[in-house]
Every structure is written in structure tokens, then in C-alpha cells.
Length: 200
Image (cartoon, rainbow, N blue to C red; front, side, top):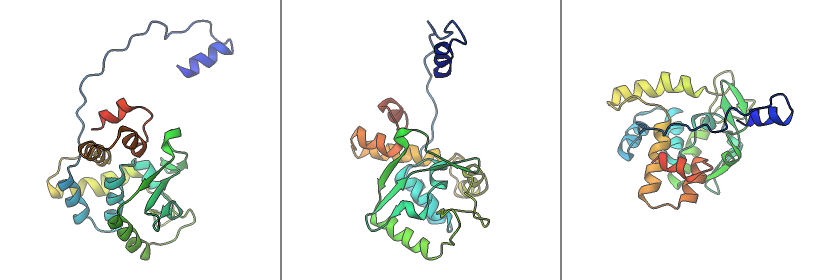
């Protein structure tokens, strides 16, 4: 729609095909959210570095591409905060998904301690990424999901799903504890409340 508006402004086209367009209402979407108990089983059963990877996903609810883009410099462990400033898409570092994507996550003391422990065995790489391949390239969250998360879920008897289940689980937990909508939107990086409610 934005591209077509620009095309009209530049006089490449004269009409707008979106005028009068009425989209059908979206039906119910089946989403899966990890429960707290399932999250604990996943993190307890995973070995490093995946245990820390899953723990960050569960506690913050950040996107798969965002966690793959995390750098050690994005961690403020003294202040117990993780900053999201970039993302990874198909092996390439890029800006976050939207203006709301740049955000900070207060984290628990338990996660701070876990990250401190993880960093003691962390191998430096040229990009300073928290999670990098042996070649120093960013992890591909799709490959990590297929090669690491799915086999673990199968072993634990948890339905097969992706990293979105951590986000949906986080959103559900925030809803259960009565977190204000603005806090929930900020943590999930959503511009509107309707999208955030759909994650619960």
C-alpha cells in the first residue's frame, strides 16, 4: 500500500487498487505457548550454549532473529538489563524489525548469574556476538530451531513448535501477573495493543 501511494505521488500510476478494499476478518489462529513448567523442563534439559539461549528467550520474549543478533556489549549485567539493537535475517545482521524494536529488558538476578557463568566459557568473535558459529558468523535461528530445539522437544514429549512459543509464553505470563499493556507491548516490540493481546 505504501509503495502504491508513492507510485501515485510520483505519477507512475493514476489509480489506487486499495480504494474500497475490504479484507475478510481473520479467523481464530491456533498458537502454542510454552507453560512455565515446560520452559523449565526445556532449560533444565538443554546443554550450553542452548540453555542460556532458551533462558533468554523465555524470560524476555525477544524474537529469534533478535537473540541471534545479541552482542556481549548489549548486556549490562551490573544493571540487570539486556538491550536489543540489531537482528539477524538469513545470516545477515540488520536493524530490528520496527522503530519499537529497539528496546531494553530488565532481567532477573538468576538470568544475570547464568549469563555471567556462560560468559566465562564464551569464545570471542569478530562481531562480538553472544551466540556465534565456530567461524564467528551469527546463528541462524531457523537452523537452531530445527537442529536443536525440535529434537529436545521430541525427547521431552512437548509438541513441536518454534521460538514463537517462548514469546507467546512470556506474553501469557505477563498477562497473568497483570503487567500494564504498555510494558507488555514494549517487551514484545509491538506498536499496537491488539497484536500484543493476540500473543496471550
